[in-house]
Figure 1 (cartoon, rainbow, N blue to C red):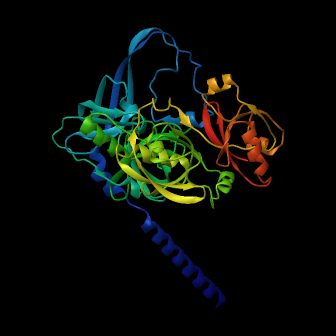
Figure 2 (cartoon, rainbow, N blue to C red):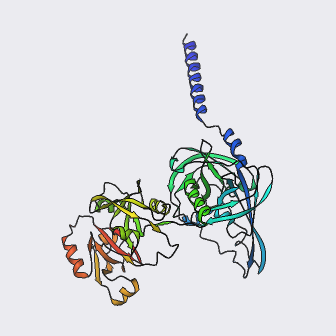
Figure 3 (cartoon, helix red, strand yellow):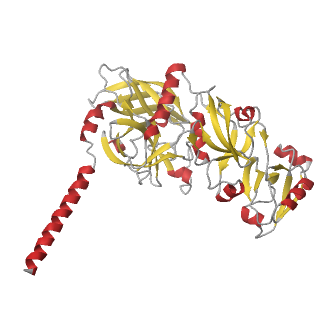
Length: 465
């Protein structure tokens, strides 16, 4: 009798387990229809360019693979640069993917797939090849727009990348290593991810397997909508290592619309240098937790200065969106239409307030070589001195004190202050000379954490001391 009961419970448990497994299996997505509906919208891209080598290359002159920046590799590498070469003119080929965004023949891909190309060929699922015209390219976002002449085109559906959430299922289609129309799936691992070479792109991170040749291909959601363009991987081998990154489709379509309408890309500009708010800085600014983007300098005559933003302000929101960390801000600003007025929520002197800022146009590369407005610094274990005329001339800093020595194991040493740092502001009080420094420091409680603004090698940054 006991044996029968045991057998009964065993069978019942087994059936329950099978039911649970079946229930979980039913929840897994089936991508078959999505692939059938969209495969014809995906294309292979081959770009060719003539390269004239005037000198040989050193086969050992490769980048240091130990830095994060070098680990972020584009999905393909041309054959140049890895072997010694004699002076000659030869052909270089690059391969990638792309997809139709409308019935007029416009194709989206990555800028690095077609950059500097003399000839671009697009191959479709019908094994037909078409010459493609490069309509426009934006290297900062790694987006390129092509066009071909083709009678029947079935474009993808464009989704809304702002709606993407961590955990969403995604599907990538491309031609990794030349294996055309390969489909791989995964989930969204993170959103608004900042990468070393993508200041203006809030990347979508995914674990869908992508490899060389996937670059420029679409990333779909379960509704069959494109939410991103596969662009980069994190790897020390050049192949997939579980970390892939896609350009949000909203960012890409903003570039497309500008290229179509005016032939070039304009980016919004605020005119501030920012840094993350550390745990210690959060305490000194009376924040409950580290958040926002701390303004360490303001460009003279910039939109930020005109609106009244100041050094020491912490930007908490921009255009209605929360700023969790400083890297979130540049893409938001860059994607705002030039001339638009947006609300910027800040924390100033412990109080939150809203400031209206009219966004300017980013002068690609030139706006950084402008004069800066400064403020903030402190001392516990610091030996300081006056700025000499030569130091003022070399640093373009007209006020403050210079750190001449740091006492080992002191608070200043532990905070990372160095000899040569210029202290320009302590706890929101401007420091013009050693007398100002000493007066402020006498009032500082020894146990109080204060925010110090320094200039180091021409860059402004806050230090919690």
